Image (cartoon, rainbow, N blue to C red; front, top):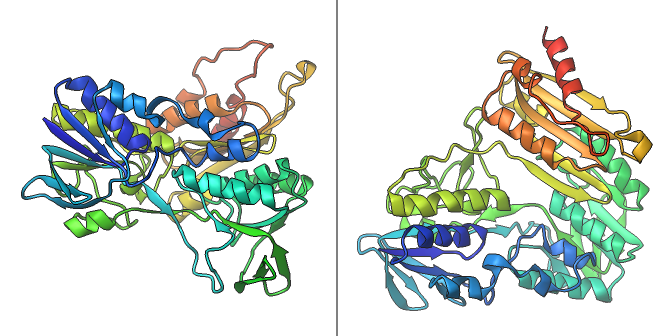
Length: 441
């Protein structure tokens, strides 16, 4: 069996690993147009803020070439796949031809380049899974002392935190609508905005950028009521799925711009799968199409496609409930499911409750937490949650993710047994769930 995987990020690496585990005789080739193996954009800020001392500390597991060598997987760096000949089952990379029985597209995504006038590709940065982007940004950070960050997603805010950790006095964050809008409703985002402002971040929203210019070695961001003069600009406004190769092959693209896949992650060509950031995803709540470009989803879909390519479509992908977590300043921010705004836009009648918990483990210096839970009023099931706390919130997000995915009624969810000890963080979702049940009657 011959399997060709285009893309050596998380999705492609996990797919290759599964193929090798299931078929020790298979010929597995992984292609990447980059010079070296990549890294998740969410890990790059750890080096930028000084929490991790050097880039090499991020290289582990499938991010080092020995991972492929030990498993007899062909890794082709600096090797761009320019065509896939589906009738002949061949791929073309750097002018060479490779046969395949199954192919897996793990093409990733590219940071969005905004259409502002005055951009010149000097002192303008973004992050992808290419470690070269991180190194270029680090060089700028150590040379300068002021920056404008355009965008309000989690990567943008993590870069703002990194700059403050590096002693930057001027960190401007310009957001068109609201911060972390894909994950947080306005009432929860307001709490995070308060923390950012208290830490000296100049948060400008809604920001309407008229143009960007360069003069005297500086960048200028011109707004209707002010002009910001800074050393460099970071763009964190999302990423577009890489689909040029798929378009060239004639694969079907979806309404979100990603590659259409079925429940087995097959594209419109049955012998070709698509995974990770380049695929069109869907939610498990109502099945609506969406982009979900996170490492966790890349790993999940890579696992499924790799095994399906060998076993013959034994595993169905059900979609995502969009679990998410990050750390901004001292606060962990977690979310799962729909925001209340998105749920209403999709025609769901909602009920929600927001709880500012008392101090957890107060005698042991515990921290407060802000919880928002969102329910489908008619189905009386949980469809979303948002948490902000200095305590760890990942366990709660994961618990809620399982409840949303299984469409568990609230009255059953509130009865789940939970562990407790005064020495560790308490499970705080019982109180907001009880309030939701009371509201629903």
